[in-house]
Image (spheres, rainbow, N blue to C red):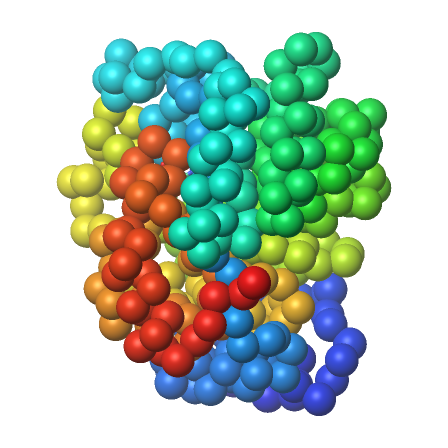
Length: 331
Ligand code: SAM
Ligand code: DTB
Ligand code: SF4
């Protein structure tokens, strides 16, 4: 049995010394006990709102990395049919950001299928996109792959609110998913982001064939970062045909939505101040499963018809979901 004083609501000190065993015990608690615990932490540490974040792929396909889940990897392009496109124009991106704001989003996230950022005209354009999004009064987040310190500082000067760079899975399982970079590369980028004074957005994916211990180990790595990431996306694998993991997992049972609820709840308990984002994989969840994720401590989701290359939930249904839960979108 875990110690019920762990991250007790009245304790404003957050922990950075979670063990994998403690976290695995939390993940395996009887569901209602886990929900009670997560809910208590959520009420003590979090506002009542839910942040709607819209996502745009500003540079699609042709990525040199071999991430087994990703439709944008050049390694699987023949099988997925996702073509390599060039970087979008700044104006076109800002038009999408404006539309997202009008629809109710307060954060705009831009993703590029790059292994790493390269200095030059394209990176300068991305900085202009960031400036433009900030001028609209929205939070701006980008996910561009690996980043050097001076590039993080340049993004900070453009006004970037957050940088997304997911650890994806446990250090132990990582090699089963990606071979073209290693875990320490990801951690180094996160530390450049932190040092530049940009908030850190980092999380992972469940449903790739990992064990509960791997999930605990991912959460341990995230929750032992000091300070904790401000934003933690929890994705369920979107099984895209033609990707190695999409094809493999299609033959197996998809991840149980309750496992996603458990992952959200334990992210909430271990990282009380973070915005926990219910991310990819939401479109296959029932309304009730999504409500359970919100109850367990998720307080953001992607809002808009598309994620990067795959469809997302209907926006009217999403606003209805919030209404049903009695929650408000953050301004
Ligand atoms: N290239 C950059 C990188 O990898 O950091 C940014 C874009 S990448 C598509 C951003 C994140 O999307 C990945 O780290 C992964 O967590 C998530 N992702 C990509 N494909 C996914 C899928 N099929 N299902 C769930 N999450 C996915
Ligand atoms: C995150 O954790 N998930 C988002 C965002 N951060 C960049 C991406 C999900 C991508 C799902 C597959 C696709 O649409 O291509
Ligand atoms: Fe490239 Fe990012 Fe996709 Fe990996 S997840 S293949 S780095 S776009």
